[in-house]
Image 1: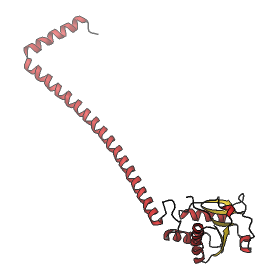
Image 2: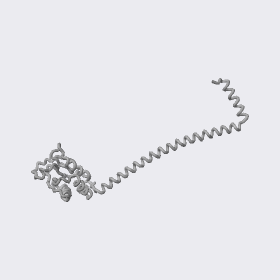
Image 3: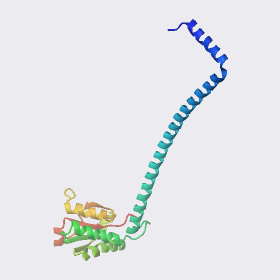
Image 4: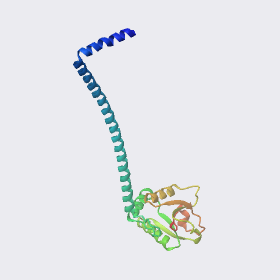
Length: 217
């Protein structure tokens, strides 16, 4: 390890060199400074470019996500427009052309062995006219429809329902039937088929029914 005297001697000799040749020394300092500046500048530029690339990639991902959301919203809007689902409260329910097509196709594909369907409706104008659209649809594809009117005591039930004689034992056809309704954007749920009415032979053989109650509005 050099001593303090050696270090002092080194700088003293170096000072003589700098004093005797200031021009070359200054030039050397400038060259070294330029080299260091170039190296540091390149490093910082690379870091900035890397950061900009990361920001650009992030922005591209966000833009792609936003485009996907807009595309999905557009598809959903188009689907609702095709179904023409009433959105204002107070409107009469109706089966659109698209809903009828879906119901007819899905019923034939998945429930073609069902030849008879019992359809109940609350004894009021709107539920009756909505139920008639279902009966016309199923009759048109060769299904025998037994039409029944629900008594007043069932008026507290709302919407479209699939009635079950035994809610603890849901038949597979009933599960498929409610899935068919859902596929046509018809909200439906199960209820107990226990209205206490005298039943026809067709009703006694049926495991479920379609029940059209009052609308939710």
